[in-house]
Length: 347
Image (cartoon, rainbow, N blue to C red; front, side, top):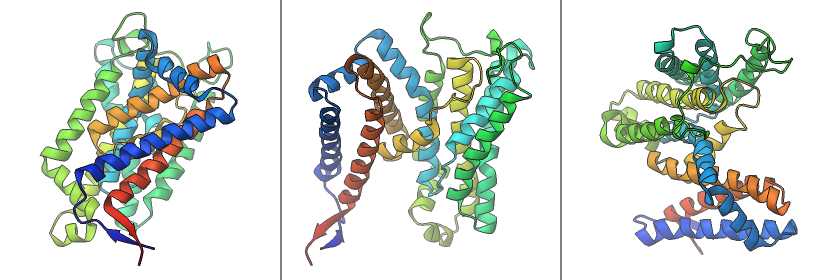
């Protein structure tokens, strides 16, 4: 058995294999539900109902999708240029810290929201810039440096919440003081948690799509990602492209943390992110690194998580099925993508 490249894959091959991957994922989900002692069809129905079966459920799904769109875009931008940013979690917390530093009264009310967003974006960009400079100057593997930054930032946030940023009125809990009302993102619908961070995420996806498909920088990103040696031979400023990519990627991930604090939570705590940075990798890969596809897959992933919570309460099935479902979906999708480019032949 050997692998043979497919020079010009047909549209049926490009669309059919991912569709088969999603179908296989559903079958695995049903098998997991059966192993958990529940009715597979009922479990799937409860997941769908819990995610989009009511106005409240739908808005919760959109709310959960907001940080996933930002982190998915951050990963998609970086991976498109073969810059392996595994540190979106760290950049997310950098943006969250800025939201608290500037949103608890440090700035005047009329300007606090746009200024804190801009500074948060800059903080995330600078945080990713360090590993990229180490990569282009010293050849240090960015996978290692960005991954380690996640743990460094987690410890730094823990220090801040137990020290300088700890809320004196928090009854001893490790959380920051609440943001002032002027530093909060307004709700899209009064009385519900969905905030305008979701709208900002959609705008960001559109901007990234324009950059990647309509600008010189986007062409350079794709060229560097396709073949860095050929791009360098063609005279492209490869190092500069990687630096620009890092600034955009880090800034997008930081907006995820900023929007969670300014929109959803109103304060910073250690459990702000249940792994949004890591889940962003799944979102980006399932979207085939397409910025508009990131929106769709982020909604799908968010729906799985929100629906799994409702399903767990209704059927008594562990919510870990959602984690396994997404892992299986990613594995099947990666396999489907690979098989669109190569075929298995006997030789």
